[in-house]
Length: 201
Image 1 (cartoon, rainbow, N blue to C red):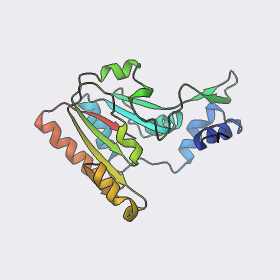
Image 2 (image 1 turned 90 degrees about the vertical axis):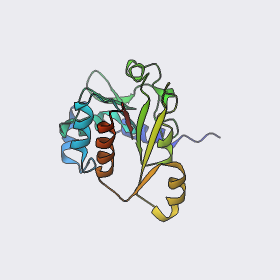
Image 3 (image 1 turned 45 degrees about the vertical axis):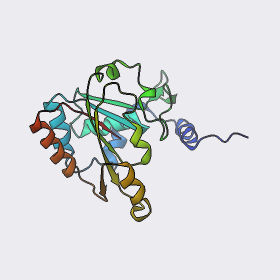
Image 4 (image 1 turned 180 degrees about the horizontal axis):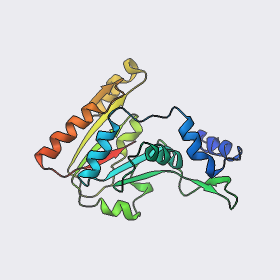
């Protein structure tokens, strides 16, 4: 017997809740959803220097975009690949669009044919930010990449997971809820004059 994956079950449960598109902004405003401290510097620096920011998320794209918009940092250089809600003519959630994005397929296979992905061709440097082992593959398949600096945020089960993270990421930040290190590295890279694109989860 084939068991239904937990992420598909979660989406099915959401569809049963009669969620309305008009409720998303209010729900985000009333939630405790946060971006890491230092996000304004990070997002604005990328925008000002015309650096693409490619966000992969196994969550809900509509909610993620609304969080970024309400923080006033949703700039034109940002593209989100996530699970987007599909609403019926009355504005009620009826399902999700396109291919399901989950922990195990967060790589270029789910967006290779998109117009935004084509714009990334020719970029040689990638700054990859992740907080799970599944995030390590986010830049896989991008043609022409020469350098990938992988920064891992190890938030939970630190002692248990430290060795795996240290073996997989170039830099591991333990229980660090800020983007201070990332912002410092970004400034250093920009001062060196190297082009970069940024991938985050």
